[in-house]
Length: 323
Image (cartoon, rainbow, N blue to C red; front, side, top):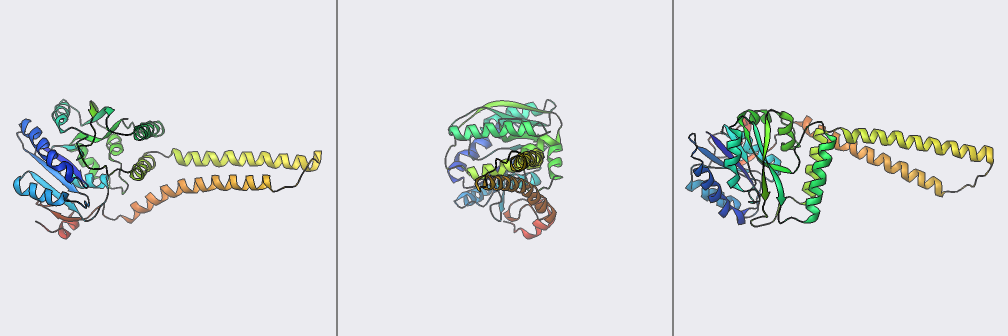
C-alpha cells in the first residue's frame, strides 16, 4: 500500500457527503502505483456518520472504517487509525474540510524529496473567532518556549508522515496523546507546506474550549517540566517573603514596640500561602494523574466494529465483530 489517509469522524454527517468525493478525486489524480486506502475512524458519533461510513465501505473497497466502542477523543481516534494503517506514507486530516484534501499531493511530493514528516502550516484561519485565534496562537508560543522539543507553531495534525515515523508512534503508548508533539520528539527530517485554512464546511466543531484546554495540558505536561519548576520556585519565593515578614514582625514587636494586633494581616498571609500551596499541589496532581493512567496500562481504545481484515492489537481483534 503506497498511501493511507486517516480521517477521524465525530458527528460529521454534514461534511461526509463532500469529504469523500474530494479525497477520492485527489487520490485518484495522484496515480499511486501501490494503491491507497481511506481509513475513517468513527469516534462515538451520535448522528448518521456511522451509517454513511457503512454505505461508503459497501460501495468502495478502498474505504476502511473503524467504529470505536465510545468517544475516546480525537487523538486516540487518530492513534487507532495509525495502528491499522498499511501505507508506506500516512496522511492525517480532519473531516471538517478546514484542511483541504487538495493539498495532499503537494505534501506527498515534498515527502518524496527525502523528508519523513511534512506538516501543513497555517498562514491564516478563516471562520474562527478572535478569542480562539488568540488562545491558539498563545498556546503554541508558550509551548514552544517551555519545551526542549521543537514543536512547530501554527500547525495542527494535518500532515503526512513516513512508515518510519508511524512505527515510532506505535512504540509510544502513553494514555494522554499529543501527536504533533510526539512526532516532533521522534525527530528525522521534517519540513512544512503553508496554506490558508478554510472555515468548516458544515456542522459544529467537536473541539470545545474544555477539550482545547485538556489538549493544551496534555501537550505541556507531556513535553515540559517547567510547571513543576515554577511551583518549586514559587514555593521558595513565598517562603522568602514569609521569612521577611516574620523578621519585620519581630522587629516591630520587640524593638520599635509599634505593634498593633489585628487579624487582617494574618488572614491575608494565610490566604496567600494557602493559594500558592493549592496551585503547587494542583500542578503536581496533573503530572501524577498522567503517571497513574500510564501505570494502569489500559488499552487506549476498543473497537466495536470494523471492515479491516485484522486489527493491530490482538486482544482488540478478538473482541471486535467483523462486518
